[in-house]
Image 1 (cartoon, rainbow over the protein chains, first blue to last red):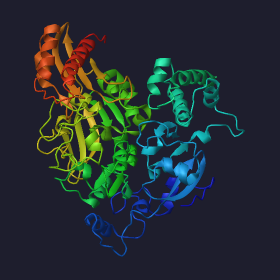
Image 2 (image 1 turned 90 degrees about the vertical axis):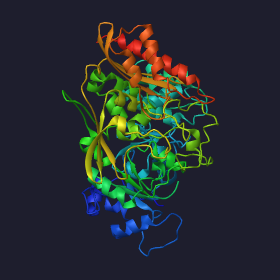
Image 3 (image 1 turned 120 degrees about the vertical axis):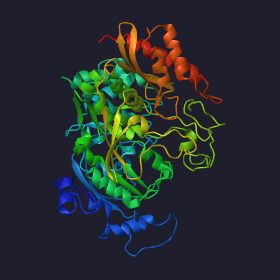
Image 4 (image 1 turned 180 degrees about the horizontal axis):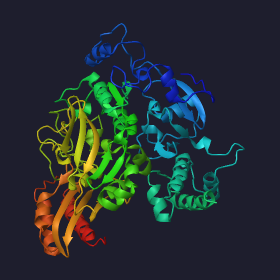
Length: 224
Length: 342
C-alpha cells in the first residue's frame, strides 16, 4: 500500500470519467468498471469465477481477484489521498493505517461505540462501518482537520479541555466530531437533547456530565 | 472478513444486472447469499466482519440516491419515501413529521445519529435480527444461517427473543422500528427485479420463520427495494410510536407499538396497530384493531385490545415478561395517541 497524496487535481468522479468507465451505465449494467474489473476481464469470466464453488481451486488465467488492491482516492481534511487498498479496508483503517491519521480511534469496530466518528460531507458517520471505497467522492473531516490553519483549536476541542470532558481520552476524538455535528444539526438545545443526540458515543470513563457541559459551552461559542 | 468483489451501480436496473452476476439460489439462506447490495452498510459491514455474511460480490447502490430513490415526496396521493433516503433525512422531513408522526418517531428512536445518517430506509427494513446466536459464528445451531442446524436460542439465553410469530425452528426477534410504522399504515413496497418492477404490500415483505427461517423476505435474488409508498388515511396524523427498552436511548426495543387512530369523539372509528420487539417479523395486530373498532376507548376496550394482540404469544424461559410488557406498551401507546391534540 502506498499513499501518493496530492492536494491538487481532479475530484474522484472526474477521474472515473477519465478512466473511461465512470458513472455511465456500461454493458455490464451500470457498474463502475474500474472498481469492478481490475483488468480487462470480460463480465462472462466474472460470472464463471463467481459460480465456482467456494473452496474449489480452479484458477482461471485472467480471473478477477478480490484480493487485488483497488486504486481509490479519498479527500481527507481537504487533501486528496490516492491509495491502493484491499477492498475490505474500512474508512477507519484507511485513515489510521494507510494515511497515518491516527486521531480517529477504533473502539468496537462494529458501529456500537462511536469512537470512529468522522464527518462525511458535513454529516457524522461511523468510519468503521464504511468501506473506504464508499467514501470516494465525499469530503472527509477527521479530528486532525478541526483546528485552524494556525493551530487554533476548534471551540469544541477547547471546551472539552476547559470542562475536563475526558479521562482516558480514547473516545474523545469521536465525541468531539459527533458534538460538532450535533451542534450543527441544531440538536444541542438542552441537556436532555444533547444526551439523546450524543447517545451514539460511549465513554467508559463516564465523563458524560462534563461532555454535556463542554458541548453547551462550545455551542454558544460556535454561534457567535 | 472474507474477500469480495466491489461493484458500483448507478441505476436500479444496472444494480439488478450486476447483482445477478453472482447468481443466488432462491432457497439458499438470504444471509448466506453470494451477492449482496450495499447501501448504508450498517448491517452488512457489521455482519461481514463477523463472518455471518460472506458475499463474493457486493454491489454498492449509494449512487441511486441521485434517482427518485433518494427523494421524499408528499402529495394528496400519499407519501413517497425513496429507498435510498437516509433515516435521518426522513425523520427531519417536515411533511413526514406533520402528516405521519409515527414514521418520524420510529426513525428518531432508532439507533444513533451516526447510524441514522448512514442507514437507508430500504436497508433499514431488511436489517437482520440481533439474536446473539445468529450473530456469533461459534454457535453452529442457527436455522437462519444453516437450515436444519437447530436453534441455540430456543433453550438458551432468550430474553430478547420473540413471543409472536415464532416457530419451533426460530424465535429471533425482528429488531427494527420503522417497519412497524409502515405496516401499520398499509404501506406498499416498490421493487425492481430481474423481470422488471413490481409493487407488493409491506405486510407481504417479511416472512415468518415457520419451517424455513432462513428465508426472511419475499424478495427473490436480484430484487431491489426502490421506494415505499404510504397512502393517505384519516388516521395517519393521529399516530405515535412508543418504544420501551433497557436504556433510554440507542437500544433495540424490548416492546414497541406503532399506533394510528381515527376517532369520533371518544369512540374509535378505525385503529391501526403494529408491534415491535416482541415478534419475529414486523407484526400487524389486526385482532387488536378489531377489538377497538366502533368502541369508546375505555379501560375495557384497551384491555381487550391488548389481550387480543398477545393471545397467540408463545414465550420461552427468559422472555415471558414481554407478554405483560407488550400489553402495557400497547395500552399506553393507545392512550397517548388518543390524547394527541391535532
